[in-house]
Length: 190
Image (cartoon, rainbow, N blue to C red; front, side, top):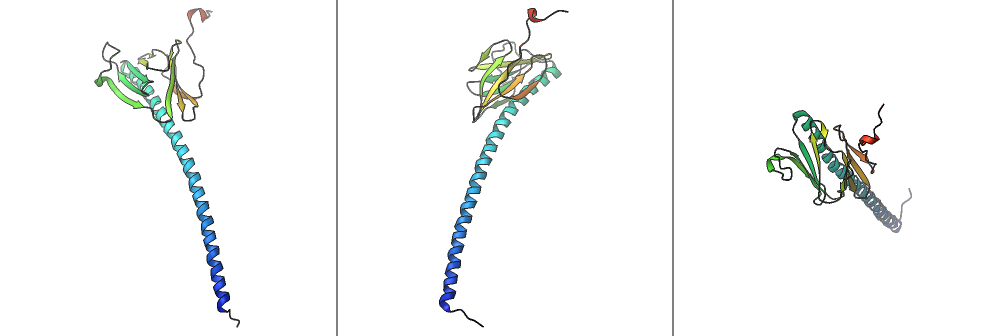
């Protein structure tokens, strides 16, 4: 039975220990790389989902205004404050439309990092990129149609389109042209 000499056995242990240390460093480096990649992807997903959640919250508020106006016959108003990057839904109860009473507020929301309103355009041709924009809903639909254009963290446009006569509020990719109602001279008679 062959036996190993003591120096040969010690060399094998040293080589095994050094090889294990190199393996450990490589494995830890790869693990750190995978964690970094996962973290970057996760933060990207969270930012996108946060943007979508904020815009979807706004769309739900607009839909709530249209549905409540159609069901109750009362007037509702969604006010978008472009300066403060906030919005609120109120049930109009007073004749003074300029003043919002606390008891009229149904819900409020704000847009955060990576989600801001760039501008609002109405189907009558008016638009604003500062101050307040108001969408009023009554039992027969929206007083004015229009669009609210959002920008995400990568400056890509997303549009919430509001139909004038139909209570349709939808989120669209990009910045599509706004459909405008036809004037009397544009309507052909049969």
